[in-house]
Image (cartoon, rainbow, N blue to C red; front, side):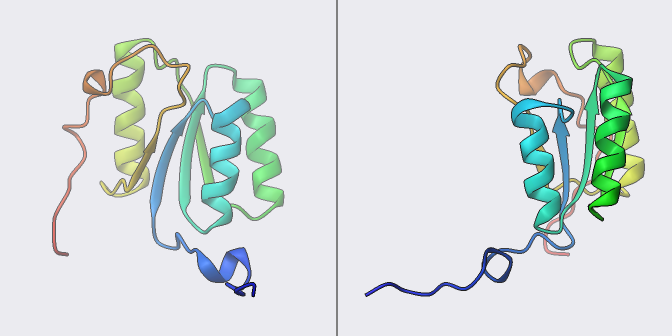
Length: 122
């Protein structure tokens, strides 16, 4: 006997959540942006390619997805620091989900998170 769990939207909600997805203009990163935003999360993504990123941003806007974008080369420390500052400002210091597609060749420990504010039991 099959169990009816309802629609995807009824089972899952990320309303109110915030997410950063690097490399969101194509591939796994792009798919993650669409899925997270599709479940209601506010998503910020970045890419090195400004033209591709703008085209994606336009399509997400047409789909009424809450996605902001910025050009960033995450292989460059200064660029990552600027990205984290942008994310901190965009989400008022709240970041719930961090997605780093597997093609990145940097350690999570190299990403400057000290600018993000977290509080437990809010």
